[in-house]
Amino acid sequence: MCELLAMSANVPTDIVFSFTGLVERGGKTGPHRDGWGITFYDGPGSRTFKDSDPSCRSEVASMLKSYPIKSKTVISHIRQANRGKVSLENTHPFGRELWGRNWAFAHNGQLSGYKEVLKCERFMPVGSTDSELAFCYLMDRLAANYADKKPSREQAFRFMAKEGKKLQQYGVFNMLLSDGPYLLALCGNNLNWITRKAPFGEAKLIDTEMVIDFKQETTPNDVVTVIATRPLTSNESWTKMAAGEWILFRNGVKIASGK
Amino acid sequence: MCELLAMSANVPTDIVFSFTGLVERGGKTGPHRDGWGITFYDGPGSRTFKDSDPSCRSEVASMLKSYPIKSKTVISHIRQANRGKVSLENTHPFGRELWGRNWAFAHNGQLSGYKEVLKCERFMPVGSTDSELAFCYLMDRLAANYADKKPSREQAFRFMAKEGKKLQQYGVFNMLLSDGPYLLALCGNNLNWITRKAPFGEAKLIDTEMVIDFKQETTPNDVVTVIATRPLTSNESWTKMAAGEWILFRNGVKIASGK
Image 1 (cartoon, rainbow over the protein chains, first blue to last red):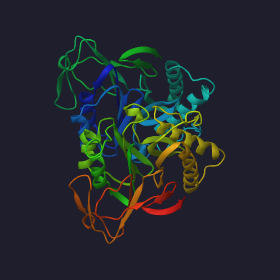
Image 2 (image 1 turned 180 degrees about the horizontal axis):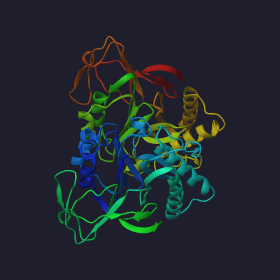
Image 3 (image 1 turned 90 degrees about the vertical axis):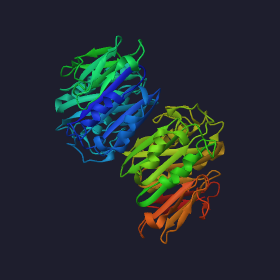
């Protein structure tokens, strides 16, 4: 399995603290040594850093821990390979463009008996993971369903939540999906989230010795939601999502959800 | 205008030497301060590092100068904005997936009177540059022309060279395009290339004090071709491409060309 991390915020925020906790799980406090990646949005643009080296000893991950990139929406993933070899093309997040929007996707779980069902036409996987195939299939469904008229961003995500839930019949399917402004979290079995806002306090990472005082790092109007496979901090109260539950975030705020 | 850099090699090779020369032109020895990017292929997978900061003072560029990523195919670009503001979505190289292959594209030049002509359907630009629009248009043409049967990689590039040449009626259009194994260089007005192979010698950068002895860095069977807007070294003999000329490289070797 793998670990997921995402952030939605109302102001460009750096994710160094959470990312530092996550990368420890990439071969040090966790077994997820088969590559990692992170996508930062900046307006409609995005950039993805990835590496097939374990995150705990990746040069690129070290750079990201010391160079805070500020973003309103981030998706990250560390991989423990099950379907598909360890290679760059099998490393999440995956990206595709549709309607002039950059879509980023990461998955935690494993599917079975899906190959006959998940047929892709327009969007094709480059690698050999069940995850990228599922992403391409979902993007195909989205493009086909709205072939005549582009949906609103929220409509598109409601559709993707519904279609993503259907994939849960093939196995464990925890999904993160973004187009930049919006972030969708769909829970298969393990996703936890927390919204930090004023009054801000201290947080302590579980995976390494690091404490942050968010009061020093934020302004009173900041709203920052973090989503992770397992809680990253030991002294805060994270909300565990139910199996099949989905939440759509924008600007750090939950704007829609369903089960 | 902008500056382009690309590499095609028969073994995974680091591009630190050439990249070090290029990034100096990003705000120091050259005026191209409006962002930069570089795509490294690793098999069918690829990763793109980009930044809207000038390359001469970018943290990400510094990391890449000290951390040699080995690749057989690389495309890089530093930008001096003309069409489209300075932002991440307007930063080259641009990427799209077609037929399960990752395509990367960078452009140097400026087009005029193209907006009524370059209509896109399947691939849509995220940003506002003439370059990304031209790339999406070319990808649309490629997908439409081979809608019934996927072409060989070489056929696809011959088609893209022909279609790219047509865009030269709208202005200056120097283009680099890759799918991983293949690298196409199409010259509008300025592209120079050099193939390094045994016996290897010393090379001296024009833009900064740096000399490399390729004998120390290579094996006798290595073949490495570098393409750049302007020659990067002062003591080697680069070949200047003619206007309208295109060359297709694979494994560092020229395998097809036309005018």
